[in-house]
Image 1 (cartoon, rainbow over the protein chains, first blue to last red):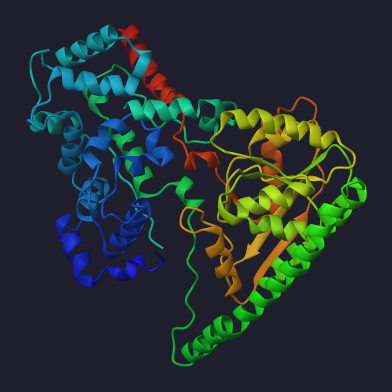
Image 2 (image 1 turned 135 degrees about the vertical axis):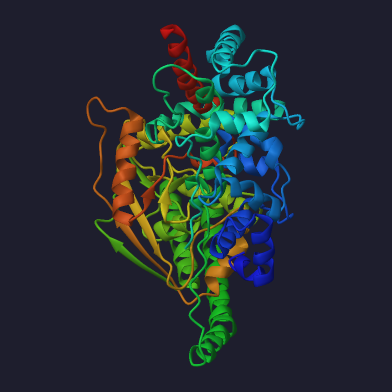
Length: 175
Length: 374
């Protein structure tokens, strides 16, 4: 497995780069491929949920179960595409789109009151009651000019989140 | 989901062993919104997502168990034939010679061991002494079979009650390397196959204790046996690998506290392998022990340093966990290893929900505080 990098040709790398809109350099792709092979323990060509959970830092994340639904069974190209939102080169709307997808589990392009509530539940666990969560959410929604019934679209998310404070970058270690 | 919770409950009995993981992890990962809570503060899950993606891209836990591939040096016209010659010598000459040495070793060992074991039933003391010497002998043959170049630093361990030796763990050959100098009794995971057979027959005679990592009941029995063993004056010194699993000799994972709450003097041993010829890390997931030995036997040599370090005692007011960390520090510094805050058993189980709950709690508190402020 030491020569995993040599199995990627220049063509492969370019193809993957294209797939992720050139958000990763060639070296980064090679590093990611090594990591992918490491996580894909039985060399199946994809990473299973169980293999993702074998990384303790990931398993401990409050959103891990939700993210698993997005990353379970990804092949290398999809794996890179998923991570590309975390590249320093990715644009703000791209990052926000990923956040939006985390909320929008039924993929209907709309995030409802209940969708947000579900994420809040993941984040706060047993330390907030359902009532408290609902209360907080209706309050901040109202202040931002929405109601309980309104569903948020991707555009709304961009409007709300696209501020300089948002930082979502992960550095790919290159040796 | 149910599977996860099952995993969690199965490892909950290990919880006591763990220092608080959060003490090591970066804090303040969940942003503290300033002033009034706004919708964007609630919707912005980017810090949590960044952490998750960071762990997917690289994490300190998997790094501990990664075999580092050797640097290729056969890259030019002059070096390549040299390398080829090396391969021929290693596989064609060295390997058969080493197999021969090992076979002779085994023949001598078995020829002596069986009569000693069977005939000296009545003379327990003498029998034990002879068996001890024979185990040392066979370990010498093993070390010779990979041309072990081992440098021992510091005073040799002595036999006395109420002391326990702890060492970092890279491969089962750690045990062989240490055993050829001193007849240690070791606490080890029960292995399948021929290693298991050796464990239950021969190594039993030096007082080694076996357990099964997954058996909760075994832990109690082992703890009891440990206590009995260290009290006995005539027993071989006890050797424990408190990491509980093989690490790649670049990192140390958390030490289990078991060895540090026996009320004994703890003598640290640091082992550092030189990777110039071969990587001595045994990646038990990818390789059987037989393959691992073959790899060592076809290399030029196994080079390593062993340091017997100054014995340590529990300081007044120190908990066993703090004591374990202090000893880990001493070993890591001596052997030049990096410390990581992980429990090696996470290779076999999932982290406890406790760690996630802590993050959830801090998030909930922030939100609730803002709710009250209103």
